Amino acid sequence: MLKYVIKGPTKGVNSSISIEGAKNCCLPLLASTVLFEDTVTLTNVNLSNDVLLTCKLLEDLGSKVEISEKNKSIKVINKKKHKLIINYKYTSRMRAVVLFLGALLSKYPKNSIQAGKPGGCSLGYRGIDFHLEGFKRLNANHTLKDGYVKISAKNGLIGNTYKFPKVSVTGTANLILSAVFAKNITTLKNISIEPEVTSLIDFLNNSAKFRFIKFKGKRTIQIKGIKKLIKGSYKVIGDRINAFSYLCVGAITRGKVKVNNINPKHLKKELEILKKIGCEIKNDNFSISINAKKKLKPTNITTGPWPSLATDNMPILMAVLATIDGKSTIKETIFSNRYMAAPELSRMGASINIKNNKATIIGVKNLFGANCICSDLRSTFAIILGAIAAKGVSKIARVYHGSRGYYQLPKKLKKLGINIKSIT
Ligand code: EPZ
Image 1 (cartoon, helix red, strand yellow):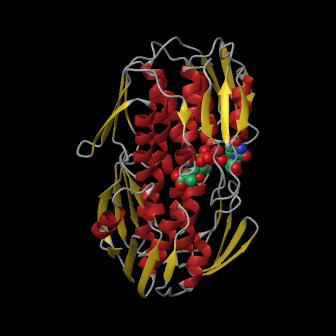
Image 2 (cartoon, rainbow, N blue to C red):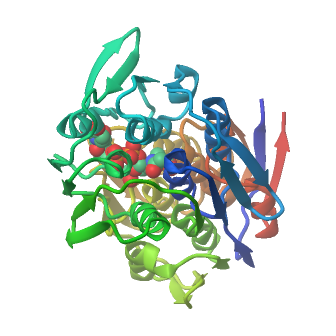
Image 3 (spheres, rainbow, N blue to C red):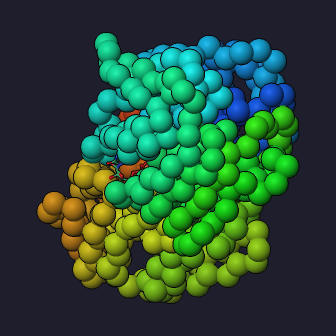
């Protein structure tokens, strides 16, 4: 199995990279393609493993998929009726394919759609109860048999109002997808306004004859069901989590990194935090530069739905804080088990104390190379950051978690001047 070997410490990197389109934007867009009669073209895509797996599912369902690595594009061509079963082999590997439940229900409401119910996850409890409750409001009923959710709306989907009990990114995208062709008007309240969700709204609006999804408040939208969607194209937004990850290579090495192909507005809170800890940040409309040459200061942070600090960026920041002199604290408000990088960073000598959803970090002068194991996508990057700062060699196992979202990760790190090797 693939491992990364990192020799540290690397100090004062001074380089630039371009990041890929956002994985979490590609996934709902790909699910939305089943709504279309003909072709959808996505550009600036992130050809990470989660996106490739989603393309495989699309092919399984009956769409033709053309991927161009050179042009960073995916073309999805729909000519025939889709299969209506999302096999558990997909939902067990990637929860986001649950988005196909909403999309297929929307396109084929009176048929029975089946999907393997996603199970446990390394981040903690992650249900799909909001998704199913929302579908029910639109007149779709489900049953659970042999681990599969079976859903249909015998009399068609009919618009209604649903208020999410808690902001949910995939829940919002799924309900939007399901309501596209529903009769009358659907109102969704307390929705996620993550840039990846507003991208989906923009894409659907641009592909229809008129803007049928409208904001009626900060977290409320109204969807006026339409008849059909024929063709579409969309340039995927830059990946704000990956952009932040590479900016933190600048922070942890106390160096300079420029990240291209990112809208700085999508990282407003994160950039505020980097400035607060003493990094110099410069940006234009498409790039962000960090200069972390001055002495950095500890801080206190709390995650939350966008525009607050993204939970995905928290483990990455935690690795940086572990190297800053003084006491920092973190409060995680989204997932119950988001500190999986902490014990691995502790193996390198970091001082991180976790109590419930809070972490207290006392920055140490030096980290030391160690063998570590990754357990989820973002903790992989946090461990890599620790290894970059650590004296000596770190061997990092189960890095396949990282390949789910970071495209060509070792190549990009090498470009930044990191001593990294892939071994099997
Ligand atoms: C999305 O997951 C992202 N995934 C995650 O990124 C990200 O960490 C998360 O949002 C939070 O920002 C994708 O976009 C593909 P949620 P999602 O529904 O949508 C609870 C990465 O690394 N909840 O917003 O699945 C849930 O337990 C991944 O790229 C319910 O209780 O997360 C959590 O506490 C990891 N019932 C909260 O809501 C539900 O039915 C927010 O989760 C749905 C959610």
